[in-house]
Image (cartoon, rainbow, N blue to C red):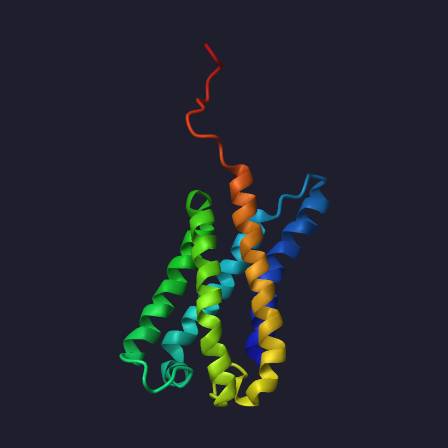
Length: 166
């Protein structure tokens, strides 16, 4: 049950620190980079679980899923790639879109894991765990989509030059 708390702290802490620093310095707060760092930390934390607790992660998937071990490793690597993409402003929007897709697509595995009481990250609590996991997943998804929206608002229109009009 510790994993959701760790994820929440990793997600929010960079934003809180950046907010305090902006207030301290007396500058306008722009939180999208801090939000991206927090989300990247969550994806690194989740990705580590794929390699450090592979056996438990495998139990989150039904036995009929082929190649469960390589799949667990591949999804862990994907989570590391998402984290890296979130940390680079130029790739942040794409990484956030991929992250949102992953959050939606991986949620059924969390439901399955709770139903079979998989011993990973609180799933052993059974379906009750979904009362914690589902709101956390919605928070992560909302956080991620706000990065997509923030990234869209920071994009410069295509064809616009940096110099003065001629």
